[in-house]
Image (tube, helix red, strand yellow):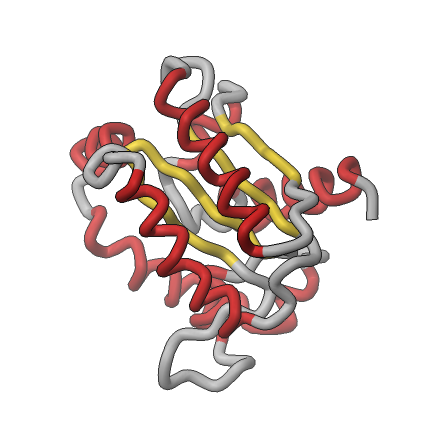
Length: 178
């Protein structure tokens, strides 16, 4: 799969699911302003991906938020297994800490087979964190705090997402072409 194909699928997911279903009410503003950096990783090993994460963290904090507010580090092939990816996230969080960025940058994650603990694989709630590829989402804490302050019911987002997805159902999700 080419980088263009990966980016096209990722943008489709962002536009149809994340923004289109309003799963993240903060995403549209930075997306339409082209402040979302999309990076396709070609890492062959987890260590290589950690090096890319190093570089992307450095770039994010060195770049004004008006230019790059958030980064999606997309890996189309390395982590086919969700549990392996989930284990990797702990190491990735350690990289954020090693950079001294705890409280400055936070990681969110998405995966094609994302599954909350205690749910069945096809439980619609899992789709809140499903994406076409394994993705590390690097978010500026300051941007998150400002967005949450401007959104009076930020604590209710997860519950709203579950309600949206339950109403949509698996067939509706599939109809989005994701």
